[in-house]
Structures are given as C-alpha cells and as structure tokens.
Length: 312
Image 1 (cartoon, rainbow, N blue to C red):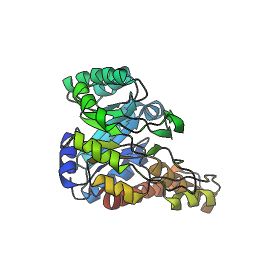
Image 2: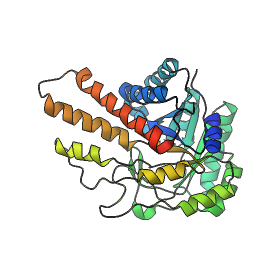
Image 3: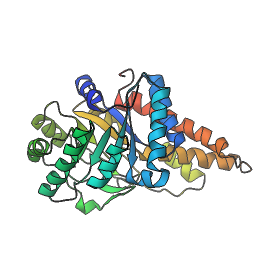
C-alpha cells in the first residue's frame, strides 16, 4: 500500500472512539521501531517530519524511509505528515515532495493572519490531493523548532472554531487544552489536568470533525530514571498522564502527537548500553536495542493509550 492521507484514518477513528498515533521520525531506527509495532498490531500510523528533522536528515532520505516502511507493511495505512510547518513555502515543498499531509501552524499570528495563511496552504494542498492540519490556540513549551513561553500559551476558544474551519477549509484542527511541548511540560509537584470542557465544547461546535492534540507525550518516568541513572541530568521532566490521553482518544480527538517519549526511550536505552558495554563502538550494537525500545514504547501507546490496535 502506498502512503495515504489521513482522511479515512480519521473517519474510522472518530466513529470508533480511538485516536491514531502521530510519531516524529528522524532516522531509520525510529521509522523501523514505530512501523514494526504498528504492523504487528494492525494499527494505522502517522509518521511525522518536522522542519528540524528535514534539516537534520534531508527530505528525500526521510520520504524514502517512509515509503520503504509502507512497502514492508502493506496491510496498514501509513501517512507522511509535516509537523508544525510555519510557512507556505515549507508546506509547498513537502506537498511537492511526496508528503500526504501537512500542518500549517500559524497559531502565533493574529487570528485573521492565521486564517489567510492556512487558507493559502489548504488551496494548494487540496489541488494536489494532500490534506491539511491547522492550529487554533497556542501551546507552551519547547520542541524542535517550536518554542512558546508559558505566559504566551492560550487555550483554544470554542466560539472561534466553526468560523476558522469554515473559512480555511482545513481537514483537521489542533487545539490547545493544556498539553505542552517537550519533556518539561509541568513543574514537579503539580498535577497536569487537560481542559476537557474546552475539548467537549469544540467538538460540539464541530461535530464529526477531527481534533488533534499536540504536546501529548507522557514522559514515562522509567525512562527519565534510566537516563539519570546512567549519567543524564533530567530533573523535573513531567508529561501528560496517560489516562487523560486515553479519555481524549475516546472523544473527538483523532490524532495524538507523541514525540518526546520516543527520544527518551532511545536515549535511556543507549545510555544503559554504553554503561554496560563501555568497549563497544559499532552503532549497530547500541542502535538495535534502542530500536526495540522505540517499538516497545509505541506498542504500549497503541494498545493502552490510543486504542487503535486492530483498526487498520
């Protein structure tokens, strides 16, 4: 099966009360770990590429890695998505270069500018058979090319979503309900709580419309502990409770972005491997267990958080 758009994925997810996992990819081992898990579980999956990942690994390398994954797992739908595109030119380049879905993130701009830029991307994308995710509301935190101070974060206003979706023509909408980018989402001792009232009101205003959650890594504490045990320094890394993400997946949320957890799983595995095998130097030796760590983490997310196993 060739890589596909998210249209059918989201229709099934909305009707079935589950969400599709969107995982950021930077290299071969991450792509392999994610798709091995999804393939075995018969789960749809979205592989995301950020602006930073394109700069790091090269657009063509990443596209061909995802195409190879689709060939290896022809029984599951795989979408290739641009995460947090910030310009029309970047979105256009990805559309022209084989992506099946793009995000235009103009959420930091004034409302009318957000609409105008999003509409411009939508028109070009739809002319080329590509779907578009937009964002309304602003998440705090730091992740790759995205950096927003906490006092600049803003919940999505439900009263704006119909106007925004109608005027832009976007295919899915990322909203801000209390998630945050990066591994340091909340201060130690605080209890993260998503604004399900905002989510519910947005879904009422936009029935049957796919909602997206960004910044939804749960930052598993076993990975943080492992990293710190083997020489890391990550005090106070706290994420979104998985039970809240599962609740969101049962509602209108059709796509949940999970990025930091993959990096934490790989880093914990590699640090442990080097501590136990200080004489090893072959990347295949330490990247193999790191790839398995990604697979194990994604397997858990698909089954216990997203609920999309067996939904391909």
